[in-house]
Amino acid sequence: MSELKTLAHEGLWKNNAALVQLLGLCPLLAVTSTVTNALGLGIATLLVLVGSNVTVSIVRNWVPKDIRIPVFVMIIAAFVTIIQLLMNAYTFGLYQSLGIFIPLIVTNCAIIGRAEAYASKNTPILSAWDGVMMGLGFAAVLVILGAMRELIGQGTLFDGAELLLGDWAASLRLEIISFDSQFLVAILPPGAFLGLGLIIAAKNYFDERKKSQTKPAAPVEKTQRARVTSLT
Amino acid sequence: MILASMKKNGAILTAFALATTGSVALVQQLTAPRIEAQEKKHLMRTLTQVLPADKYNNELYLDCIESNAPELGPNGPHRIYRAKHNGQPVALLVQHITPEGYSGNIDILTALYANAEIAGVRITQHKETPGLGDKVEVKKSDWVHSFSAVKVQSAEDPRFNVKKEGGMFDQFTGATITPRAVVHSVNTATWYAHQNFDSLFAQPNICQEEQL
Image (cartoon, rainbow over the protein chains, first blue to last red):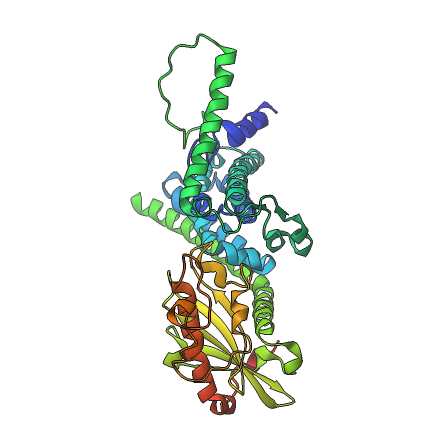
């Protein structure tokens, strides 16, 4: 029970793939121009992460240490391709707007990082939970960043949600501010960097405040490197 | 000793390669018909946008030819769909590409009637700047509708220019290159289609076998 809780805390907040480990930035920065794209890529990454974590965990006792990396890569690549085919078949519009970034999920280091650091040492159920939490943490950052950029850039939220969720979702589109022309900085890649920076700053601010509340006279800590591979 | 572990590792890798490619192949088999149907639906949606439905009564996507004409831009061959009413030629739906956009190629679909009148234009794919050049998309602005009912008169029709160069089409604030590229490409492509209207209709249909 406490293991599940720790994993949730690690994945969603303390060791968040996007905010702390800063992994998978390429898709993160590229597709977050709208909430819909961000949500689509977030769900795809989540599915790949859970699938690969579970598979890696199931086969962990049969794979010799020397060849584990190629095996993990094959498993991840297979899952990404399968998700891509499924998206192409069932969410064609979204597939078109995400384009090249679906195959690029393969290069998201968060996925092989979790396979190596967690799934290869733990049971399938815990690994699945770890995948869900890491994936949710990543997807949440994607969606927040997408919402920020879409709102500032074009003044809407959920534009194009029908591509992901079907025709009923067209009514989800909210026009919050209406601009004559779009605010380009938010839509182009620099907006993604600025937005991500602000989110990381906000997270650090909350962490600092919490820390200073719990132990006011904490000794000066050495700066810690973001943990990528070890969980112990 | 080392040979034994090589053999074992090799066998395990092979097994995993077979299992992963096998599962990918399986999913591909299962999704292939649906993906094809989706692509067809997408194509039909675009095709029916550029030509009013009451003008023709054949299945557009089942009647097409391919052309390598330089007028239609690079990366050929380009598809040309043929609209007919009771077997009579009505219009050509030409897919053409212009490399003169601001960033990368712009894919365009243009429908042209037999009397050289443009029925409709759609941008099917582009990488122009969001907020500026992307106003050629029908989703962002109704600019592409300004092509409707224009008749093309020559290979370098002076009206087929942006307004500040003496033509009849609006440029966008901050983006002249994109509309200029589209306008010029529509000009040359429609002129090509007009000049070869009858011979293009005479060519054998190559989309027939794609029938579901």
